[in-house]
Length: 180
Length: 180
Length: 180
Image (cartoon, rainbow over all chains, first blue to last red; front, side, top):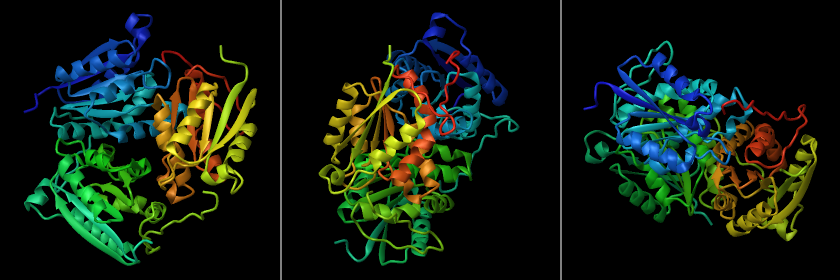
């Protein structure tokens, strides 16, 4: 039985935010989006790690082990030398869900031509769904708006917590389950 | 020389259909679509296997070995624990054709937001083209409508059977071959 | 410090062009597009190699070693037996940028349904960005039109040459760099 409260973790990946050189803006933006959207009981935790394949992969494994149902990762998905979030994600997931990256890039592309540089993706490890997001608050909202309607059903399918959403903001879609 | 009759195989991947717990709807839906669309001589065979990486991979290898020109696989492409069709496909193909998955998801997304959860793909092993489809009959038609116009030319390029289609339903496109 | 002149290399992949059986049309088409678009100092070189994973991978490695900032590859991205450009690209890059292939296929799909057969991609090795393009001149222009606005900023991020473009043809987009 899934617990009666979903556990969503937000991981900010940023050398400068981890050092305290500037305030993490991406993590709070993702949290605000979730708090305005999810209407069922939810615990949201936030963590910050420096960029890097090992730092991010270790944090992702720890969050899965702690029982997070959904992990949103913000930052580190570009082509710059320190951007290694995609490699870290690939290290920890059982399989990816390429439709998430495709759709987040397509939605972002309406706003900026450089959206094609993003290596955003999503994937599943056991009973945890990971989604990697951009670092900028406005881009985070664009991406969550684009894909979140499919997230509650994905969590159902992987056998983890049930999430309900405010349909006025983002209507969770659950297909009827005949002969799926 | 390719034989004068194309061999298309349809593989239904479903624990419940394999056990006989319910009738396979996906396989017949894919066959009906093909019979209404392909106008050249074609042999269509159907088979059912349970979900699972090894069961599906073995069936795909067998179909390639038996000389199938085109294999449509229905079911097992989602994120649920028993859905392992994408892993099986990856095990048997020489290379994938990511444009098929992108376009099938995009077409399905017009109908349901959960289309991004599909891990559909296509790929080539020797002279066999494999395309993985959803399990639901309506979604199968949506996906075949979205990509089949490119299938006959793909079969030409991999050196297997020539297929002609009813242009009123789905017009096969073959670019002229100068300096390709 | 990046040099004051960008080095762009164009690699034509074609058995027949390498043998001299016909004139390379793709390489000159890519060069013409670049010369009409890039307004900053640029050196453009062209090379031709036969199809094949090893021939193409060796040429790509050599171009990166010679300091090319951007390498456009034309040809060999389809599903035919001699098309092995995608495998060669995968052999040499540190990571791929899937948004390039997605967007090039989507732009090409407006023109031909067979665009989904293309295995085009892009990726980074050290300080070199590689983009694989179709072989046909018209399709090359379609693809460059679709993605080039993001290329100058990508080169900035990987720390290589700065490129300026003619905004009337293709406006380079560089997001402001706060909290990226």
